[in-house]
Image (cartoon, rainbow, N blue to C red; front, side, top):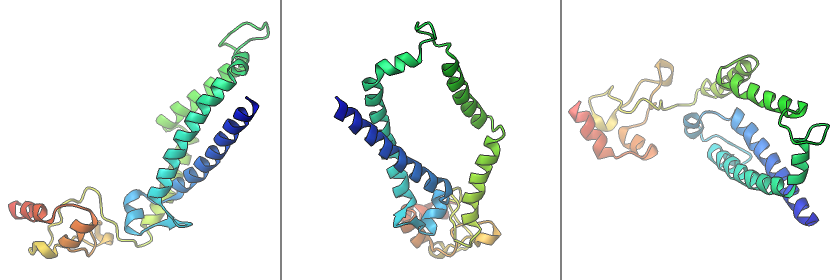
Amino acid sequence: MTSLRRFISLCISFSFLIMSYTGIMLFIAPKGRVARSMNWEFLGLEKSEFTNLHVTFMVLFLVGMLFHIYLNWGSLLNYLKNRAKSFSLLTKEFLIALGLNLFFIVGTLYYWAPFEQFLDFQEEVKASWETNGAPIAKENDKSPTQNNNPINVKSQSLNEGGGYGQLTLKNASVQHTFALEKALEHIREK
């Protein structure tokens, strides 16, 4: 039993460290469309790989925590007992922990300070990648129509409001995986 507790504790510790690292990388990484357009990577990993690691280690952490709770159920119940050793959810520590977590939930959702400044800082970090001149395809710009030739359709440049940069419609269909013939048909209809 001791080796199982040790194993679970080490598992959740390692998964916590990896989730923290990938979470920090995702915090500073550019937004998805920017990361894809500039082929962003750090230490050989792309943003999607950081996301995949973060999610899978979150699952490992959650499963490990369920085992941790099971193995330490007695100790956890003791945390919920008052000085008279009777079960109570109204212990000082329980109420403070619950209050802190509720504060983080409500503060984040309602954008209270200091959460507002922290979340704005994250957006500034992510937006800083966009101002470095990388060509960025806007997610809502689905049908560029600047040129009459549908094969060589080009949208406005990034500095004039964004778009698909200098991609031809054929190249954009390959890069963004949409059917060229359907795009041409849609343009002809418009």
